[in-house]
Amino acid sequence: MAKYKMILDLDTGIDDALAIAYALAAPECDLIGIVCSYGNLLVDGAVQNSLNLLEMLGHPEVPVFRGLSHSSTTDSFSVMPVSQLIHGKNGIGEVELKQADRQVESMSGVDFFIEAAHKYQGQLLIVPTGPLTNLAAAIKKDPEIVDLIGHVTLMGGALTVPGNVTAVTEANINQDPEAADEVFRSKLPLTMIGLDVTTRTLLTKQDTKKWRDLNTLSGQKYADLTDYYIDAYKVTSPHLGGCALHDPLAVACAVDPSLVQTIYLNMKVDTEGAFRGRTIGDETRINDEARQTQAAVNVDVDRFVSTFMRYLTDLFAKH
Image 1: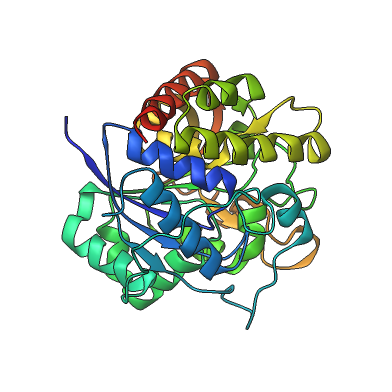
Image 2 (image 1 turned 120 degrees about the vertical axis):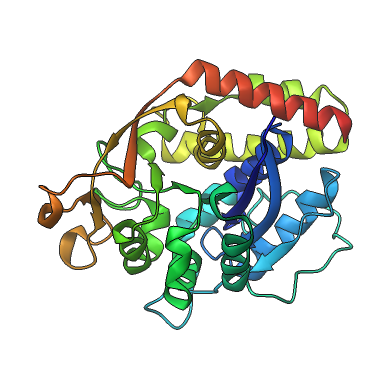
């Protein structure tokens, strides 16, 4: 099986932790690195969570890079209270993990994106599941990578459903609408995995019990952090009846695009006014052929959730 070279760009909260596990478990993935961002917590917390999770899951060889610590238009970043409610103050549901032996890499996350794009070109898949600040900065520093990267599959945005921060804005895009707009308007081959599809892919405590029953360290820790997430959803989104698998769905769709139905659309992100952060079709390119940017509008829920459970349960059984 041909393996894709994958970089995750994470603000390592709970669903990001599930995304790491999926990328490690999926046979078609070669996870070559994690770039960290701010969002669910501060960037240094995301770095440490990523290192700790990789070591617990038996993959300390995967390097972790520090991305930018705040949006492209601000000088600092503070975690939103709703993010702490959903992910806990430490980003992973207050679950304590052993501190990893490995340290963060000295190269910046932005430079790692550029280096990997030149090295792997069409083989490279980038999966951002936080703000798009790091990717936008990499494009600005080396515009050539837009023509090199194989595909970007991002978790963010909302096209056909309301946002989860404002009526029109999803959290990751909301962190840095300007960076997101640059990425969406670039010529990158891109698929948006937004709230349109991620809120249909749900996990319950019946699922996490299967991990707990493995009696392994990772099974227990992942059950604990995901149960925290499920409980948070009872407060924020009681109508769903479980927690949404936002970030792991983006990883799954990166290697198996057939999991979702998409529409091609030339997109933009509003950066001003009441609709700041909205992901929508660009009216100035409405008559241009749309060939680069797709938005997912439907998902094969049963196939994704069953694959997710199989991959993660097998991984947790070993560690």
